[in-house]
Amino acid sequence: MLGNREALWTLWEVSRAGTHAAAAARLGITASAVGQQLKALERHAGVALFERVGRRARLTPAGAALVARLGEHLPALDAAVEEASETHRVVRGEVALGGPWPFFRYWLRPRLPSLLAAHPELRLDVRFDVPSRVARRLLDGELDLGIVGLLPEAPGLELHPVAQEQFVAVASPGYLKRWGTPRSARDFAAHRFVAFDSDLAMLLPWWRAAFGAKEPLPKQVVCRIANLDEMLALAEAGVGLAVLPDYLVQPALREGRVLELTPDAPRRAARRPSGTLWVAWRKAAAPTARFLAVRDWLLSKDRRGQRA
Image (tube, rainbow, N blue to C red):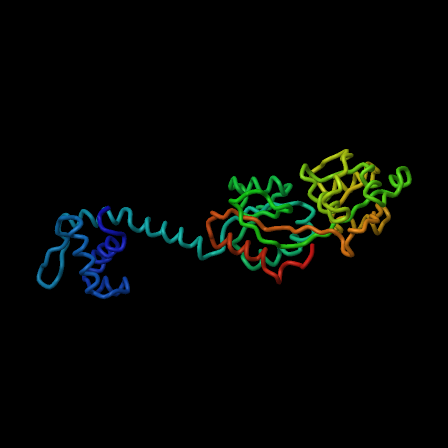
């Protein structure tokens, strides 16, 4: 490449300002530095770009031809560089954020107004999906940031904890009247379950906390469905037991549409079983201002509760 961008820009400024001193004042450098850059540019070009006419420097024909080409391209190039640089300084543009709908509804929705008020030129593309697919969409570049539950086996992702959600097992009064209220691990194993997605995201930690890792998981998972609201609706309809976040089932518990099930097990902790929710992003994600603003806001302690 002929010279560097700085020297070419210096040549362009000298051609417009008329003197080294005037160009130096525009560029914020010394007149000596202007002269050194132009001499270096002439060495690269192998041709004189200026000639002395009295006390002034005048462009040679080769210099004038080069300046004419610079006038066609250099200002647009500089504007493009400035625009690219601005993405790292100004919170502007779109960030795609994915995660589970019930958690977003409970945790994210009340927090969004403050984020969007702080950054008027920020746009969010919020997409609801199950955690297993959120991880894949992050790796594929479809999402910039995501909320996941169980840690994905994805070395290309960076993960940081953002919230805790506690799990409860529930069933409808009608179901319990028909099939009985389970207490022991054997009792629970004999019941029908409605579970979330294929990884049993909430049932698994609840079961391990209640009965230990050696107790086999229940085999009667009669419905796997990647929607917490539908899980609760099926439990209310008497299809089976469901393990769900406590914030989701609280209204149904208050209204008696479902009842909480408490196992009689020596391993049962005083507190309900819980799970960690993680903010995830690609390790190779470009650190634009908009990405960093949303990521840091999600992780900020003054914007997240200690539990979901």
